Amino acid sequence: MSRSARSRTRKKINPLKLLRLVSLSVIAILLLNEFREQIQRRSPLVPFFNGYEPQPLVMTGGDPYIRALMRTITASESNVERPYNVLYGGKYVSDLSKHPQQCVPIVTGPNVGNCTTAAGRYQFLNTTWYEKAEKYHPSPSGLLWWKSYSFEPEYQDRVIYAWLKDPQAWGVNISQLLKEGKVEEVLRLLSGTWTSLGYGIETNSMSPHLPKIYEKMLRQELGHHIS
Image 1 (tube, helix red, strand yellow):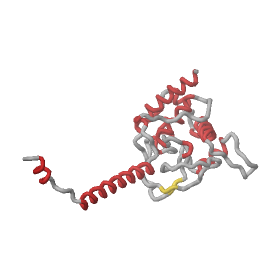
Image 2 (cartoon, rainbow, N blue to C red):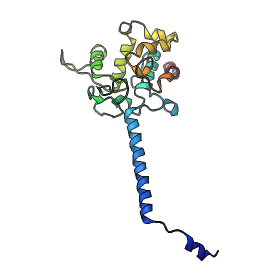
Image 3 (cartoon, rainbow, N blue to C red):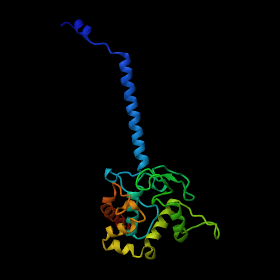
Image 4 (tube, helix red, strand yellow):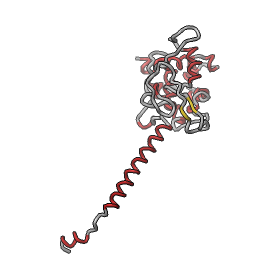
């Protein structure tokens, strides 16, 4: 068959079919992007085993065993690019002069339909923050009953550090348990406060990996402590 004959036998592309195909492709891309955004809003976690790990603390000094535990809590609660600024669901806030106090609708788990004020690296509820900040915050401002508590990164770290270091708050010496290698016992103890640590009602994909994550964080913290 000659070249001219072959060209005559080629089917012409129907412009309407081409337009329909392009439209369907655009719709598919838009739906895929929306699905990805929904997943990100529902879970702010950055996968630890995809090359990410909990960021170093802003706070300097302190017990390396407790510091490693704080970073481990982050792995399941707020392992994102800006953990100190994150709200439940993945939205970020910039004003950390106080707890954000934004009640975000819960979209998964047993409490779906309610809302939560969980915010920051340790996902403090506003009530928990004010309760613990009143006891552990190193630099409250104001007078008497009119005190306010900065939610800046260092203060988030320092409040949680002092809370975890307080044996009266937990009924045990958490640091000593960690030094004895009883990481899972500690995680079980804390799971009533941070349910994503495992043993609770809202475990996530990170929960079973937390003991190993703690070991890695501890190696890093011990290395910094020695140096």
